[in-house]
Length: 219
Length: 162
Image (cartoon, rainbow over all chains, first blue to last red; front, side):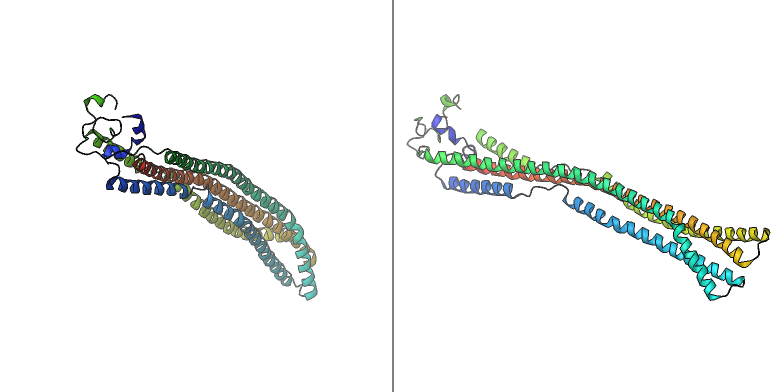
């Protein structure tokens, strides 16, 4: 092939599409549509984001945990109150059985018992508070580990996304530049082959005439 | 003939590479972990319900036995006066209440720690899942991008040159 035809080494040549024909125009339209469609899909494709649904679930776990712990604590206090009530009634019945029926005496005994209970429960409540803090710390460690890992990965994902976008726009810019240059320096218009010039090997219309034996080494 | 074969190979190769099926990641192990975690929560609930029921039953027996022993000890010591024996029994009741509160507190603390542990395991699992899902999404994105990029290149080839 000659130098001025080197830019014409396209698929259309392989398919034997002649320039200026209806097929040539049709393929230009198809090609432009495929190129535009391919480019638009490339730039509009949604780049995946790291860990969005999982982070939401982790947030829910973190938010629900204090409620679970408070529930256990409330149940504990309720159970203690129930037991204290049972013990108090048992003590009152025991006193009545022993002949202590004076209401003031009974009320006083009950008051003393309940006052004594706060002292009895103090150690247990302190231990429970310590366990509550320990449990919260365990969860906080897990949350911290997760969020630290996710921040790093999300940042890398955004960097990769930026690189991908830069590549796409860079490709478009390069192709636009090539197109602009080709419009500035248009290739010579080649004449359509006719019966009178088939077999001729002039430089002006070598492109669209099947090469003769002597031209094979050029190809 | 050769140009036609070349064109066919070019188009065929382009389309084959664009439509290549990508392998799917095997997430069966992560699914198994999710199942185990759900079972873990259930086991924790069942265990502590059982433990609390057992504690209530055992404490009831323990309380009765201890009070009976206390009464017998007082009678054995010749203490029959009601106010005096009542004061001694009151102290016994408070001591038993303290024992009960301690046992309940231990059980409640263990339950809190068990739930924190289960939630921590779930968070670790979600970290693994996020990684696996992201890789899956990225593979899908790359496949689509390559497919459309290849189609765009094919279009560019068709319009190239005059």
